Amino acid sequence: MSLSSAISNAVSGLTAVSRGTEIVASNLANASTPGYGAREVSLSARTFGGGVHVDGVIRRVPVAILADSRLAQADLGKALLTHDFHSRIEQAVGSANQPDSLLGMFNDFENALTIAAATPESGPRLQGVLDGAQALTQKIRAIADTIQASRSEADQRIAKDIDRLNTSLSEIARLNRMITVARSKGQDSAGLEDARQNMIAGISDIVAIQEVPRANGQIALFTKGGATLLDGTTPAKIEFSATPVITPQMSFQHGQLGGITFDGMALSGNQMSLFRGGSLEAAFDIRDNLAPGYQSTIDTYAADLYRRVATDTVDPTIGTGMPGLFTDRQSTLSNVDLTGFANRIEVNAALDPENGGILSRIRDGLYGLSSQNVADGTILNNIRDALARRDSAMIPRTGVTNHSATTFASEILTFAANDRLKSEAGAQKSKSYSEGIEMMLAAHGVDSDQEIEQLIQLEKAYAANAKVIQAANDMLDQLLRLS
Image 1: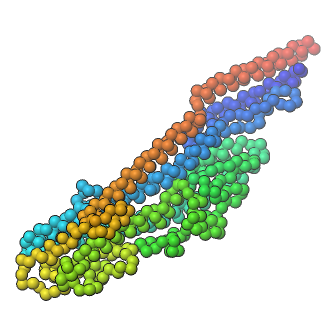
Image 2 (image 1 turned 135 degrees about the horizontal axis):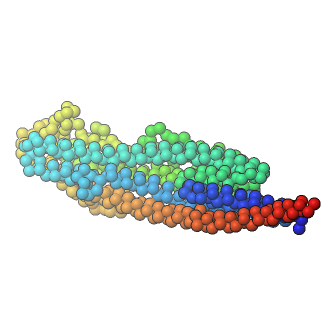
Image 3 (image 1 turned 180 degrees about the vertical axis):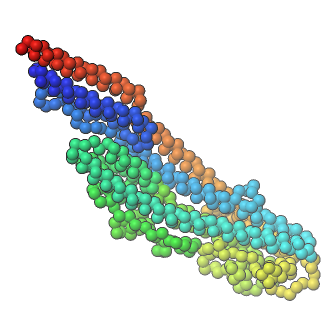
């Protein structure tokens, strides 16, 4: 081997050592940086003349674990949003030990009826019945309003998620192009790949994403349901229009609420499965299924209260088509469609002195003349008995029949609590799994001990190559002295 070849080989070795040292320093400096992929130098023997060639920098990223991490993030995003919804509904309904729960309000109203029936001549006791009825209807309306607020917030969440998804996909497409350009120029693209990985991680909670490598360092992104989000230089165009105000009667099935438009095609209910997994699916489920289910139940409960006391067997002064103690905004409840009744239920204004009513009508009858017998508590007892009467109709979601109004309220509390507990368990499971995957991912990140060991090897390589150059230099000096 000639001196020039020896020097050339040693210089190539020093170049590789220099690049390797730079990569080790970068790895150690970014050991705690989220999304940073540990790097290593890719080397190969030079074809002619010997020595070593620096082919580039490789990111050490466990592809399989990274894919599992993204699916876990989507599952966690879905679980957390669902749990948040059920927690909010349970809080609105209340628990059995809370005096301001639905059951607590009903019990207060029932107790007020019992006390007033014992002393019907007492104005304060009659006022207690009115106050109890009004508090109960206010609680029912508050629960129904919470349900609709949850639907509106879910609708707005969908719009924000779609906007975030579109923005991130455009940025990922841009990074794809930049990585291709960098590689074509022989430049290090690892930093750009880190940025791209972080962008994908930032939308993994929205929808379950799967990544497929393409040529020249590019990637394609697909949803787990099969939709192509990005494959090439132009991302898919995803559109959604939020609805400013959502009422109980509005639904996606009837075209009153927005759905996803994917590359110009409006997706049907079945096609929405393309975007399953993640917070996007959870938000649609809340808006179109979970919240309407709760609405139907609370509407049925409100209608049950209305019908129990709106008969002439309870109050002989009530005629056909007249509302009783409870009203649909001071009108008769229609049996055609109960949707939204819980948002409209009110106590009959004929009883409320603040609205021009007469308080004694609670005792004497809604539509009759004032009774001369102020000690007659028959109607009050009739109302209480009607609420306690066993009804053969089935309570929604439970299958329970032969129930009283108390049982109905209790069942609503029960399934609200059960839904919250079930969703909480699901969220905890998803969180534990996601954290486990992240720990596995972190274990494949920067290993400080391994990097220090690599640094020692590089130091030895540097010393060896430097010794070759020093030896060559000594030989040249010797030759020059001989000449």
